[in-house]
Length: 452
Picture 1 (tube, rainbow, N blue to C red):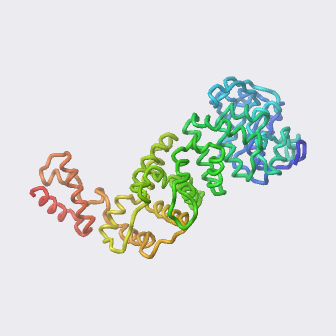
Picture 2 (cartoon, rainbow, N blue to C red; picture 1 turned 180 degrees about the horizontal axis):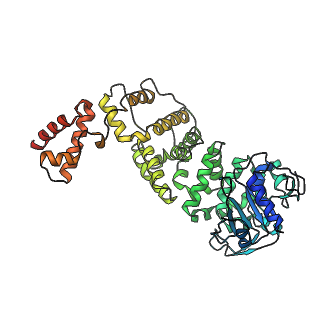
Picture 3 (spheres, one colour; picture 1 turned 90 degrees about the horizontal axis):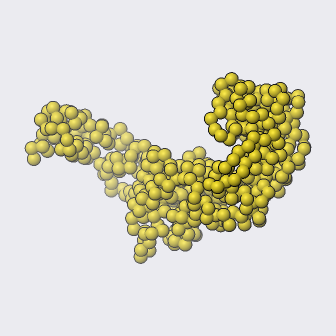
């Protein structure tokens, strides 16, 4: 397709209603950005973004219940059908990016051409202008040749790439995501500009980097391609230097490659529907960069958990996400044998956490795939079966048939640390023999422990 070509779209009713209302009010309204890119590429957009010549206060006044809570002219129009709101942004012209993130000045514009000119890549600088019939007919507005770039498999910055990346350093990482998602090669001047600005990525906020990384890890394409591209563009060393440090660390695995190759393959082998689990796969061996000694990586799981936590805190990840990934890295090297007793299996479950077991076994399976090995009989698959067999056993203090209050009342011990130690000892006894978990037997055992 080319600029001006007709393009018919099956619009969601809520989007069609917004476009029609703005047009009826005498303002230009178009679809812009990623949704147009996806449509040109033959995909159904997940989000529909509208741009208009109407100022934001006019847009907000035209749609009851609309909200406008940002300085960039984006009004969210409520979907009467209960779906996601439609974001409507006023055409704008931006000036100055001293923090390489937000424009120093935003001015409302009346020109679609000026609005498209401020965007990052040609494939995102397209618009769809509906015709007056409001029946899904319209034409493509593509002043920078984004449709042709998509067809040619090219990712190209709008205008001067050095200026575009100087405005917002996150565009460096977004280039990687878009190139790998759509299987595009980088336009040489665009690639050169990314390399020149790569060090600036280290100054990005953790939240913005994390969001882009999770989008990369969610993609249908194997994420290894994106991280290899990041390494080639010098972005990996800027954003995840701990992961980049795995390059050149030797691996004694059937599959060729170093510790970074292995980590990328592990992420690839995990489900795209769970980007945080893929992130754990990416980081599971990050401790190997500093623990190699005499051909072994002593305690790389322990050290790697500490490094993974530092990375995730830097990325401002939610606490639950940090905890999940760190625990997986810490426990991924479990060594099961046939000789484990049922009590040992129960202690393993308690140590790892019931909530994490399925993740841990998925990570171990991906680790095996990335290594090119199959665990022998008696490996993690047998352990998974034995874990299921003890799932109903008491595994935590809250599962005990008595509580700390019971011990205070029955044994006359004052509340405090001694009660906690006594409950821990009782739990150890129950892990060894679940048959002890009755009120009478635990009180009898507690009395013996307290008197001894």
